Image (cartoon, rainbow, N blue to C red; front, side, top):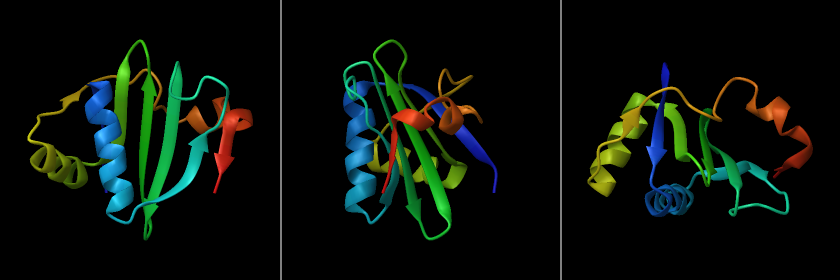
Length: 106
């Protein structure tokens, strides 16, 4: 399934989506764990069955969510919003490698 990346997600909405996903049964498998967590940067990998969602946030570019289009469509309905899609600042193929020393695996 093709994944897309929603970008420039307002901080409050970003963390509301994260809380909603966790309450809905998504497990946090990887989490950013450095001194600036939630201040300058944040990252989560969530898993449900074999499906992954990546969520990244920074104080300059706000939130990004990488997921399948149907998942993002459902989140848009749940939160009565319309995501923007564009080039991500953080959610690229190298994110796990770039931050590996600052990530906690659950």
